[in-house]
Length: 140
Image (cartoon, one colour):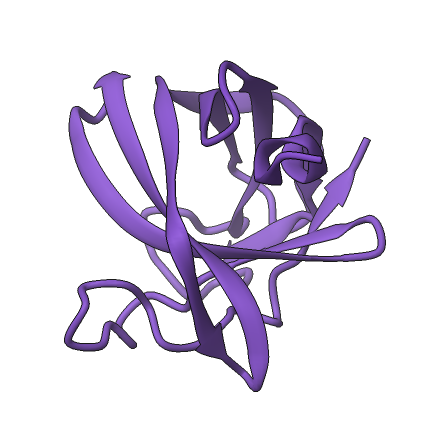
């Protein structure tokens, strides 16, 4: 089994609140977002990805979507490292549509939950050193 086989499929975050009601004058009723990620195997170590984030002017992802952000490209696996006392996969998101550029990240699956790296914890290798365990992605 290739590393890409574990990750192939569609993933969705839970609703994430950006602002509580009254916290930001620009969004008096609050603000939230919901993200989806689709990963498709290309080779044993490469996948295509499509990331969509929908924003809502409510604190619970209800009502009409007010903005949508898209990013597409390739996901390249680059070995493993240890984070949160687990062996995790090092990856590079190489975006060609949306926000162009390369982002180094780490990925780990526990059951039907996908975890990405915690932003701001990058180590000398340029990859996050910790998993963001507070924001799992669920397989759908």
